[in-house]
Length: 232
Length: 272
Picture 1 (tube, chains in turn yellow, green):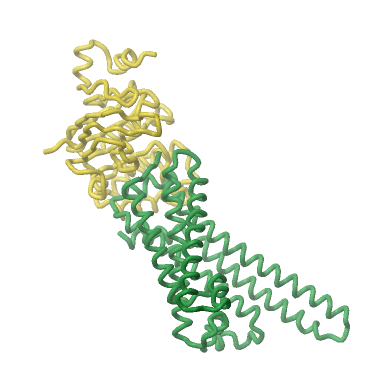
Picture 2 (cartoon, chains in turn blue, cyan):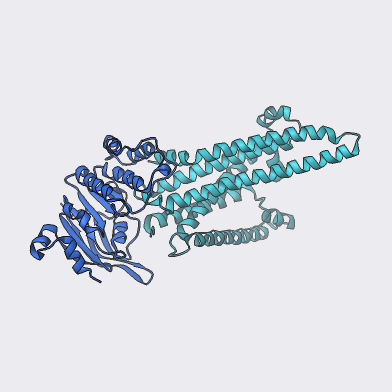
């Protein structure tokens, strides 16, 4: 079976600025992978290209062996780094929206997670706090049985207690045969759940390795190793 | 998927457009009642009374016209805002990651927008009929009794139901062309690295100029080909095209703008 993500010579320029530079990357199925890099390293650009929100300047990206399109979107569950839901909608309407468009969406799972977080289904999104909105989005994304979960900065901007809940939600709810690609620069918080890490700097992949292997070979945590690699 | 997309477009728009249309209806009834009452005083023997009634009617009619224009423009601006934010704003991150064909997205947005513009146009048309129509007691029997096309007859100078219907079909095609012109402009504008809204406005006006040039060339060509009169030339410039030309042109514009929108969404999406 083809890797869930294959990038070959993937390049993205914004005018004269190169956001991704000849990225070659294979992501295997059934792994939790951290896409780690400092701000502006190209993480979000790579994720947006995977989701068809940006077009590469050069190179190719394949999701499950095919180019991003209608078919790949049915298999990717994407959490952007911003609120993408209509603020006037009620939580239950948003659940219905996901149920309408994603055949793999499990509404019961979503309502169960909402109840555990005491988020009322009839609340309008505009009346929820920023952190609660992010939790609602994560619940929606993790209530799908996708092949690839792409989570862009899922724990940025939320309190430590919420971070724990979010990470627990990710690990407890994902499809075991699926891959989770989790982009963040808060490595210490996510390190415990990662199988594999991809370090990205200035648009280039500088390392792709097993998290446990890094800990054994380097004799330090991934967070510590990251700080050394990306030391200013 | 098209039906589902339309369902959510409808849900996002009806809360604005139903009240907007009710406002037009209320304004029309209020203006008619006020004019009716004031109109009786207009014929009064007391000159001052008649003058005051005349001023009152004038003010009411001006307020009515301004209010209707405001409501209509407000509705149109909302549709443009809704298109931009849901397609190329933050909500676009959800829209463009749905497993749906881009054709469905464009068609759903165009159909719902056209529906609301048509409803508002129809309500305004009936409203103008009510306010300016004189004997309002027979409003419904007159309007639905076949006289609805009389104003079109005045414009087209042909008393023919078929012509009136075809003129409406051409106008509907024009509405779709305008909606798709907005979507094409916004789509091209979002390709810009900075000032995306300004770039969208720029494209809109550029399309407008281009359309004016095309129409100018066609008018000249028609004039030459038909040995037309100056009168015909002016009627073309004023927009009183024969419905055949209006329909063909609007369909061509709509198709062109649709293709531009689809191409950008499918191959050039740039949600930076």
